[in-house]
Image (cartoon, rainbow, N blue to C red):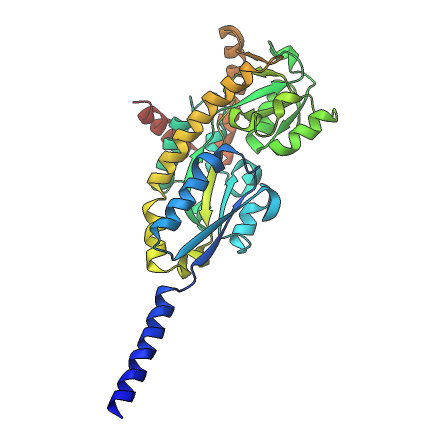
Length: 334
């Protein structure tokens, strides 16, 4: 009797142990609204997700959904909050009305490059100056693209060349930039800019270098003016309820590879994307990459200074945030 009872108990224990060991991993849906071969995906998100999964000891399994499968840049933040996606990459400019403070990164002629802007922006978040804008999600990383620049159908050398052009923009601040430069702003994403230029709806687009090649912008807008019209903030965030349900090993794996670690990784990748993106386009026959001469650049800068002044006045705690951002940019230069 005892032997049979012991055998049955041992068998049950083995079954339970097997169930624990072979428990199904938590499936995580990572939304990436850009094309699958976008460099943020290839260089950072795909290897990052694989590393997190591996470190989770079989408790997590992440699948990346590129393109509009789970949402577009315009609605991906809401899709994340609503649980359609568990993790999402998105750009602040596409939903700028929800992130007025974070849009400090979009101010023209302020930041020099992506890595510097990323460090400064993340510092603002950690200081609590913009963190309230991300309270509805678990922010895994906040970073910046390189400065957006002007890509057009015809050469742009002076302000008069911009007057009257229909220009694609992707944020509120860039809309103001175009207005001050004398153009007409049309809101759309990088993906939409290609077909709009092809159909003659736009004459130019203001986009960062990393967006040019993936969206084939150079095919329809072959003239590029390398002028620093403002960097563009982007985020990688997680649904709060999804994170709360993760097993401890899953949380530990995710936490160890996110935040400061992921921010630095994205900042370096973004800087590299700018350099290689510009170089790749420059090598293509029929492409022109130019800079404004010093006097003309100063004219553009002087004309756009009021945008920062207006942003400070219209943004809650704007003066403090703007001063802190410039302070952090200066630190990041060293």
